[in-house]
Image (cartoon, rainbow, N blue to C red; front, side, top):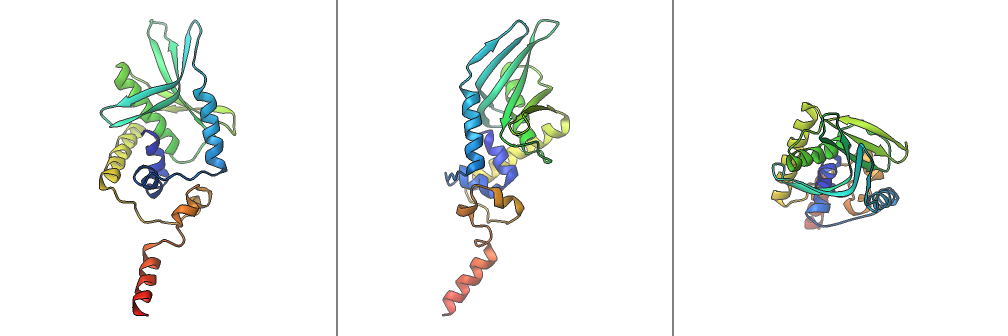
Length: 200
């Protein structure tokens, strides 16, 4: 799934819990995101003279080995005739400093390019808290990072093992905190506990 790229970049352990162990843990943030996506995916399609809007579009890339659904794909009519696709991904929060959301959107663009035999130079992220779009240019650096992340994701899933936890400040807002237990379930602490139990 294309969404696994975002899980992987946020935390490989979270990605493995979802996509290897088939776990899901919801909190307020994930529920708000789910509701936002449900609203978008119920939209169907719209058409105007120079703009067509398709909602909940199934996409795939054989090259990246990814499938998913684009929240919105806008098709803008160009002066020379063809329609230019522009993927739009909805997020509940606000723009992030890292590339997590941009990689997910770039993967959607690569899927559209492969499916429609075209070039998708940019897309947009719509953030619910800001209620505005952020334009994302799919430059060579972002495309390389997206391809590399897809390869790392496939390697993680092929191993079939969930990485050990590594606590950082992002853990406090993660819905998987009560399941992951990153402060408790570190390798060193578990090893110490087991050695102590064996000695007694």
